[in-house]
Length: 267
Ligand SMILES: [Zn+2]
Image 1 (cartoon, rainbow, N blue to C red):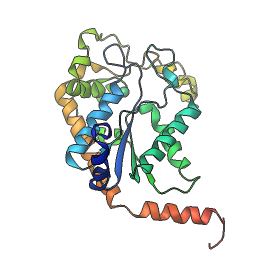
Image 2 (image 1 turned 45 degrees about the vertical axis):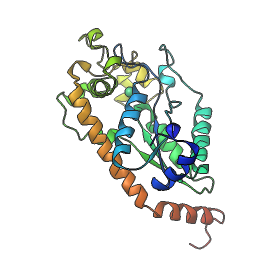
Image 3 (image 1 turned 30 degrees about the vertical axis):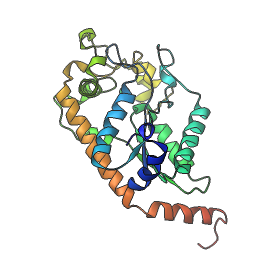
């Protein structure tokens, strides 16, 4: 069930039917090579979660795309929100979801650049007691298990995986005709001297992929896209079932907050 499609009356029943579970896809608006739409991650998130909702009662939060993307500020169409506001906004949204009775909030990360943000936001949950639990699911884990018709090293950002999903979801937004097999998707390795020494900087992605295209999308097919989306949905459905059955995370969270008000007592 999509949040924005429910009436106010129906929403109350839906919260019960979904056992208080709300899924929110964390996407972003950024360049995806020459051939894909800026909102690719948003459409992917929507497509994945709509497949989940067909198999398991859940409320899907409206499209959410104010996440981590300063690395694409040099490219047209990027929406890059300030870091502190990004965290405050996500936290405000989670509190609003919980205030509406959905006490199990599942962040589904559909943008590769969000690993750091989502892990950090998860840890921020430990500052204030709350009547809800934030769960985090990274669908990329499920994608890796799918057998696809391209060499794994040729699939990265806006590569055959994402392009295939978009061919399955919104073929009208995919421009295969502009793809050139000219090596643009290969990493430039301009900071190899640092990466070889296990050193990273914030400019690492720009150093490797300044046009936000990584891999070779020529292998993409709608069929592979369907397969990836189905596998991801299966993985998320399993995660949601585990979350619905879970009572431990909330119990431990409460115990932690009680203990953290008196550190060291009772150990
Ligand atoms: Zn993407």
